[in-house]
Length: 572
Image (cartoon, rainbow, N blue to C red; front, side, top):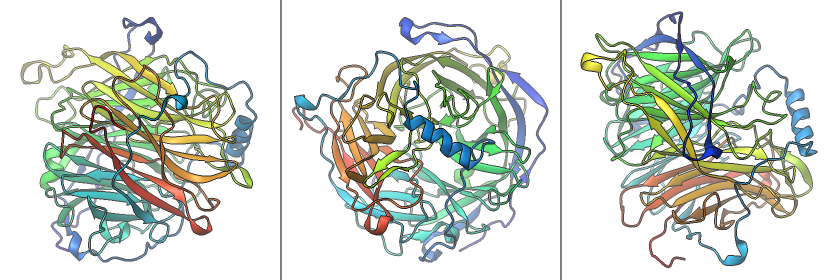
């Protein structure tokens, strides 16, 4: 590998500056989607990094990961024992079922309208990764890049793995401890760059790399970020940056972090990184929001979105979050309602700038949601952890609409995906942004839920659970959802379903198909999220690609990758 710079992150101290966000009362034309009043706050700071380290993928050796520990899972101040007790409570169905009229069971009796996946091929497995898999997929005109915890692989679009893959992330990223995971990725269709992210848990550092062009087999530029200072997710009593999220727009790469201070509690961070300088490998300063809160309560997992197409030019970075760790008795054990939509604008450090802008609104959901029960598998009730009600898979932005999903308890006291599509609305500009910065500071004024469906929340299979939904639309507005499924008779598997843009509101048409079945009972912790992205290389065929996890021989995990899309008016 050729090293351009060996300097690591140098962070600047956070400024003690609080910002009151735009959070006034507003309504939409649909009274069911009334925007709730509230107040969002955050603290503003800055960080800086030196020029990138350049690494040629051909110089990265293949091999097994160096670390065998699963990613840490801080619970926001409660013990693992208390978390499991809350999960057991959820399984009893103590009045925590979703409410509201939206969302119906799929219309299984009316035939399927999910388009079959082709191709479908095996991805990485526990042989070269660490449980759980988690998942990241990015697709270019020629390649599919898949990341799991501890490992990266590149395939052509026929499913042939490229020479020398998979490779350990500990060998790909420089200056790391080998304890690396919680992966994310995207492909920027506007500029032709892959971007991948991973968390170094022992070092408390976030690593990001961008390919110099659309070929992931060539050179990558890498940066490391730790503006919070010393942290080690493996050391008792230490701070911990956990569960990173990744998004972007025309100017900015957004990195969201669930940061757990050593003193306890949660602090949600959003790093605002200049996309152009990352692609060029330059050093730069960057703005940071931290201590994001709603109504005076600290939030977590405000998840930035990824635009579907190169033709998308959102005027702000759009993010969405659910109420989670600090709400509803903790992890929404007593139930929560609503989604928070955030807009981040004028993000970059620039001479004369009035500074970055953020704003947020909250929209009530037709369904209440609550901490989901763990999923059953054959011979082992409640053995698969379904995590909490955070939005785990990366939300996709398309034509002003955001698509995402969270896990919730159904009326059957089992875990199910609560998926949604929402439109967000921005004003022209904050009055403080004038001169050269006029119209650079739009604020979010309202949001409207267009679709909301609690998928099979009335029951599925033999005490079944459908969880970790990840959704992606295509250019035509058709939608595919990949999800995990398990029940008393079914080992953990990955399934997918789809709906046309003309499908009845608030529904999926059917349960879809199994992408990769489970062959044994899963052992150990299950994945925290799956991945689903659009493919713009052929807009006539309108494909999406997805990757999910299944239980294989001996309870280890495997993954599979598939592509689907509606390509005819009478399909399937």
